[in-house]
Image: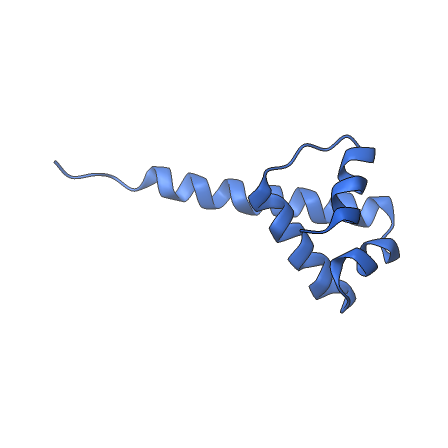
Amino acid sequence: MSVKVFERLRKLMIETTHEERKEIDEEIEKRTGKYCDEGVNELSDSEFIEIVNNIKKKIKKKKKKKVEIPSYV
């Protein structure tokens, strides 16, 4: 996990899970084409927050789908 991404999240006072941070790192690498510690410096705060919010929504949606599966007894 990226140290600089973690520091930026803390600076912006955004709480995340380990799973969310891993996804954020991957998205930064995908968007910038650089390792996340380098790529995070190329993003504005608004771009960074957009990535974080999109990841949080994506993970929340995944977890919701898992819960909605009916169990047959």
